[in-house]
Amino acid sequence: MEVSESVNLEKTTYNGEAKLFVAIDCIIFGFDGENLKLLLIKRNFEPEKGKWSLMGGFVREHENLEDGSHRILNELTGLENVYMEQMQTYGGVERDPLARTLSISYFALINIHDHDKELALSKNGFWFNLDNVPDLIFDHSEMVDKALAHLRYKAALHPLGFELLPDKFTIPQLQKLYEAIYDKQLDRRNFSRKILSTQLLIDTGEKNEGGSTKKAILYKLDKEKYNNQFNDFHYFTPKGFV
Amino acid sequence: MEVSESVNLEKTTYNGEAKLFVAIDCIIFGFDGENLKLLLIKRNFEPEKGKWSLMGGFVREHENLEDGSHRILNELTGLENVYMEQMQTYGGVERDPLARTLSISYFALINIHDHDKELALSKNGFWFNLDNVPDLIFDHSEMVDKALAHLRYKAALHPLGFELLPDKFTIPQLQKLYEAIYDKQLDRRNFSRKILSTQLLIDTGEKNEGGSTKKAILYKLDKEKYNNQFNDFHYFTPKGFV
DNA sequence: CCAAAAGTGTTTCCGTTACACCCATGG
DNA sequence: CCATGGGTGTAACGGAAACACTTTTGG
Image (cartoon, rainbow over the protein chains, first blue to last red):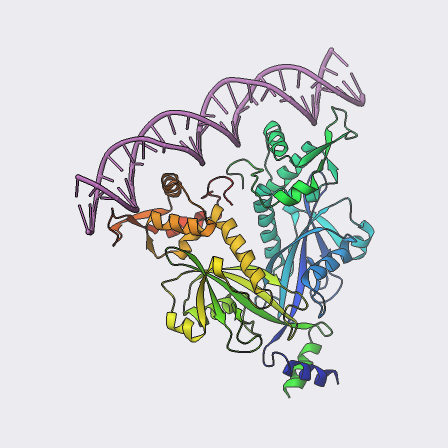
């Protein structure tokens, strides 16, 4: 009876056209203060059981893509209100050997210390440094490469990096993040001036703890300006950096 | 029998997951030498017959997305080897009232004089100036807005504009294109210097015809350099332009 | 020879770079 | 008082912007 119902529905809609499986795969970047990392899962389910892949799931019949991507990210990290961006849709005919499946890749930036570590572990989730990413199933390696290129592209022009840091952070921390993203050294003094010139940072009056040297100023993001200016070009990196 | 075959197939694949209709919609930009234009169709088929929309079609079971997007563009314009870029996938649950349908939007740049005008007319295709676009079905207006924003964003940094011009073109023509994209005036002398400094243009030795003034040099694109440097940043526009 | 558009040159200015110096903290 | 890292200042450089002038063409 399920079958005949399905057929009847299609007759009133786009009969004759193909219907496809549609998955969402999440490229999850995190920053631990030193290195830029990627969250992957070791699959304990079919297909490709035992291999590494991105966290993914299928788009449901009555779920839009924003909800779906956040649901899937939440299943692994426990996080909500995460910065996510739709990247690209992959549609190679043979990309999934089991059945024709499209995949919409989503790019997520999280503060690595915020997520639910036990939940992630229970789903077989592990963090990898970017220079140490294992082989991934299907076209997931291509998705990761594209996402990293996109991160580098976008972080050069937009104040994206804040998404990877705690609410309060210091300029040296932000600089370490940029150095991790581009795997290059930056001049401390010029970086500081460039960031402050955007007027996006608010001095909280506090200083960070720890370290046996001068304490750095803790800033927070001016959310209002951040949202308004997000699409402006800021050029956070030196020339020819990207 | 089609029905039972379909059911059997699903059982061996991702049984229990939803399958969705997936469409491709093309945002087709063209340039006529003065204005930036958009190619739309007046639908002579259901749903939303009689209304304006983007050119679209369904992704087929055994067709990848690149092939599908080019097929759909070709059906309306007769063109092949067109610059196309996947933009974004739209998945609102109610975006298509007839049935749940995802749409992958593709952004196309064509030389307006090259396309098959009779074919386009036979499919009810018409060109609109960007300041005069009619109401479109579903979320197609949003797609157009996003595509225009993307064009402006990308053309500011990459030598994208050449795709909209003939093989041989003059610098003043290119400047008119940029002025149309951004709806702003540019300084002739600085623009020329900036474009030539990219080394992407080759002097053909020819001059353009027509006009009762000095004839401009016809350039062609250095395809090799163009492909190699495409992802570099060039900053074709003045500061704060975008 | 005039108008209109195309091509080339120059000065000025501002942002970036590449530096040096001072300050705070813990040991 | 010393090592380490954070904060601020400055001179030199280079590219972009804002200009003027010359050249070509058709009428």
